[in-house]
Length: 173
Image (cartoon, rainbow, N blue to C red; front, top):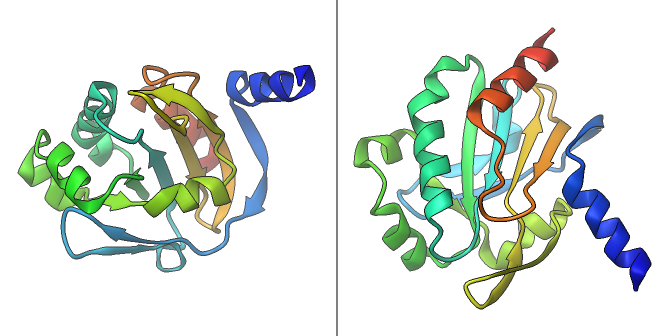
């Protein structure tokens, strides 16, 4: 058991630049409108996957609102916000977000956190009497390869927009 805990500690404490690995095609349905996200159609730009926590989380709202405000400053970057909740739960949660922002940035649904599991985002975080996946941000480069991931240690530990911007600058050189 100590070995598993140590490995989880390493995963959570070290956000890393990865050796670029091709990401399988990702398809997600929006819960806030009728759009679909299809990674295969987004070649040629950076794609940033934001894995938000299940259930009600004020940090997710603040994180999302901050990114909504600043996203236009990053050229050639698509921000994708993902929650594992039901469509009704996401619609209720997204009611706290600006309607105009949601038109630009729909909230996509990851039923049963299948994508989070597929991308090896650790779960086991106790939040609102549930066990959920940790918050995470994954950067996929214009060739469709994962080049960076940030796994938060708790609901307040998120990759700031400024940190993401610096990573995009680094990967664009």
